[in-house]
Image (tube, rainbow, N blue to C red; front, side, top):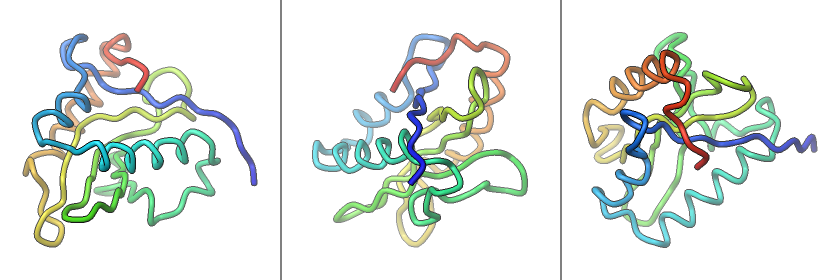
Length: 134
């Protein structure tokens, strides 16, 4: 197995507010759910992109938007944080753009999570310092 460490970043709204940390708080993500998320993040850090399972990472979404959803299965809900490769720095790195939870067979909460993720990606390209290590 090809193992290369990649960095995982988190978008910081307005350069200050970590979107994933806010999501964890706002949506009452439990310690157990956070641990499952961290296991998935560790897989992303160590596996070559070509080896990442579709069960772990869905995408690219919407025909070339360059957005992906991390698939984290939990007991009562599914965590679906949006991320992309890059888009600044190394193209091998990942950046979390927006947290989401999948409910009722593919409905997302918040419902505009994909739109927000796309907007955050664009803002990050314009403001490369608006990210921090996850």
